[in-house]
Length: 362
Length: 103
Image (cartoon, helix red, strand yellow):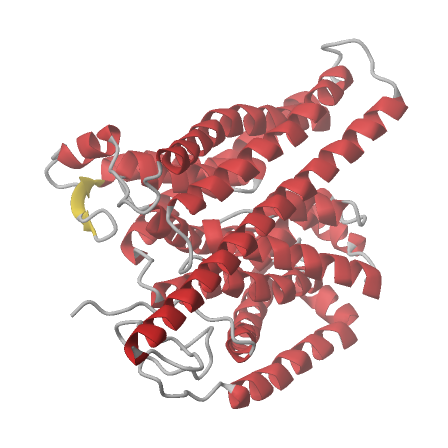
């Protein structure tokens, strides 16, 4: 414990430049989170580390801004009737267990293979999961867009229909977002996987939201809003755990929160203007873009572990910078799509209102 | 406890959340009072945090039961700053889509 507490002295000095940087990244991260239920964390943690914040303090401070942000976002989206609190809490509790287990695996990998091993594990998890899940989500959104059925009600997948049809006595719970009773034996592993991913790549929603949509049968808007409840439950528990070790830099967390609360309100408002497939589109685009960012780092860690021949320092630096730039690009691209979709939605609404008024006059 | 949209008019059916001119044609008040009050409180909290950062870091960084401090701080900031940011967008005219009721 003393070792951990001693890291507190690593709390960095803050100046206007790094505070503005954290505020802005917080804002963009919040905007995306308000819209798709998660995101931003994958940029914030490395972003803080680039300012000289130690890794664990960055993770802890990120988590401590995440849960109040998710709380504000989920309350906002609950006003629009998009949140299934019960599903969020049920998944959130099992996600908490997943976070603890995921962190335990991380620690073991770090002990056995060092920092490079741990980084390689994180990057490979990023690449594999984002390729499979992100690719699927993006393809689904693209198909909907191309088929011209963006206005049609979302169809429940065959898998979700099957999950909803299974009756295991004593484990059945009704969830309003699914309008069905399902067994918690299905929700537990999904929540657990969400938590494990959150502990590994900091964004559990990349599993949680697609799982709610494709496996449980929740509408996209409700899935992304409910993810905020999961993020709150997970973030609160995780923050407390890190705070017990004195690792939370509350200044960093609150400065990021300052920006992210502006963003999350805007992102949440944005969901009321867009068609549901846009949630999948934004999520898929971010996931697939981030995947390239982490894929670039795989050879670096493999070389550090001696699995491939050594890579020169200049190349390593170039790969690191490119990887970070792609991550920022992914977040900015997501934010751009959200703002554009929202702008279009608002314009269409205004035109419709004008048309209604002119019809009234005639 | 209400986070978010400040003192916007609350309608259960979510047809008009905050807003300037509704479909019915009446003009609603924007939450200027909430914006100003919450803005002042939120700014004061941030100023207090940054002016006392050394004491706060030393205390919050002790770990153990001191873990409650950062958690409570996060809740307090999210309440006031959340209400401020909610009112901010409403005053700026950025509001949720007004859904038409099907009769």
